[in-house]
Length: 331
Image (cartoon, rainbow, N blue to C red; front, side, top):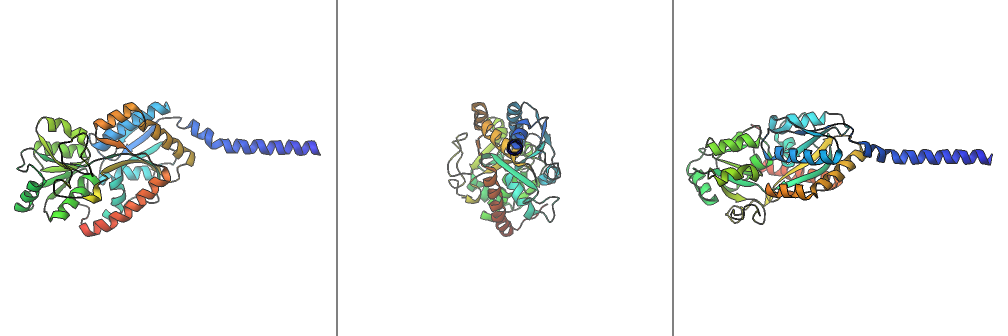
């Protein structure tokens, strides 16, 4: 009787050990095949550049390729919806422009997903200061001159964005307009890259974007001019560019700049979330990655999954009130 009980207890203990170890074993096994990283914007913009850097770094850590898929359109809603509908197995992830992610629910009458419930937060990836760039031929050498020009010619200036609802390129300029009572026409694109090229070509007047790295060759060649940057301090990458506060246009609501974050479909297993979060932290600690981010004027922004979820929820509440004041809708 005692021997039988001993065998039973041993079996139960062994079974418990296997069950407890199963999540860890699954985490070690993941990923067993290539992972798809959806970037909901066109190639060439800041999100695409960050996505490809992230994919390379995580792919090297995983020993499995992470493949970037650009699914532009619908102000990032097309690519975002594709991830919301994907299987929650860790093999389809989204690099979200977090600003657009939390404002779109209040910006569009209907969305094919629920930003609060259809995703699993993993971590922010990077934050970047938002620059105001203008075509070099625009007769405005600083922010005050730009404001005066816009007021003297209502509706004649234009700004480009990576799509209606994009945080850095659409809502930041709308906030700038609201603060100064300006009439500047919004021209949405499928990504910040195409919008930037049209500013360079002079087809539109200005853009606000985190894409300093994309803009730098055109700044160096004299085709673009940087008038201001968000944040409490000047950017290390562009110390000659004043902050918006220094330039006479404080915008504290966007001081944190633009944020790109990693999310998956709702229901993503906890062990996979932890594996992705820890791997991301490891990638962002790499000297090579840090050097590349610094060259792009981006700062690593790792965060625990639970804290990231709380951050998204709080920002959604804040911007719901701001959008009501700004009185803008999707184009």
